Image (cartoon, rainbow, N blue to C red; front, side, top):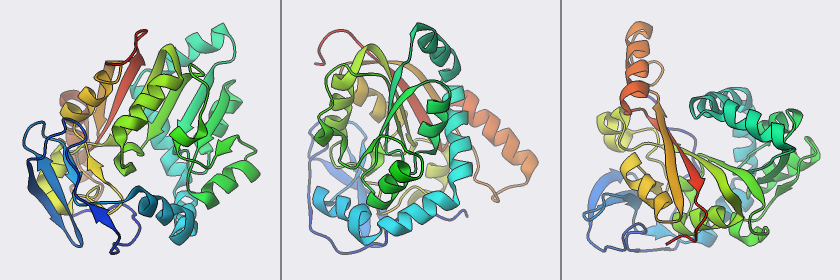
Length: 292
């Protein structure tokens, strides 16, 4: 069984019971019982969410005070591998063609929310993008600014008050599952994108094979993940906020070390083809009208 991904330690924090953030329903049934916390599934729309949920101030404090240095060390130790995975995900989403078109029109503007140490932003800047990042982990934000000389803001996305219709593309890789209010986040992305701009959103897929197989031992069922989305629950969140979903990709059929390489390659290929991968990317495009 694969180990879980890195997370801040489970601690007792002030929390509250919340209704479903997708449909507003209050009929939530126990779904995954983890040590020190639990996930519940909405019986109306199927969204899986940690409930009771820690308060937003407590979540922010984990990265800004208690465990910011640990998070930076983790990101630096895995930076090369994470960058490679991000670039593979963007390739699956057809980013190369989008990039070529936008660069031909001038110097496109991109925002990476949850940019960690800024490795991807640095690469994009070298290719001709005007780059901005958001990273609330203070040590990681400081590293991106001081070592890579990047424009990276230390406040949550909404608190930065970027002008409307600023960015051609917004990226958010393994971020939305950490947020207390994913809907507010998606609506803010809509506001700051130009009409026709693209939102590329990557997150673990609870509808995937590994999540179904390992259940509460799934590597993404961790204390820092407040929501566990599937394609069926994340797509409506985007469309109800004014986006057209133009592409969905998933990858990761079996975790490394859980099966011989030949079998893993077969599962990984099938996961991409049939959509049961462990991680998913949804590519949304901002419609011209106001979100419903």
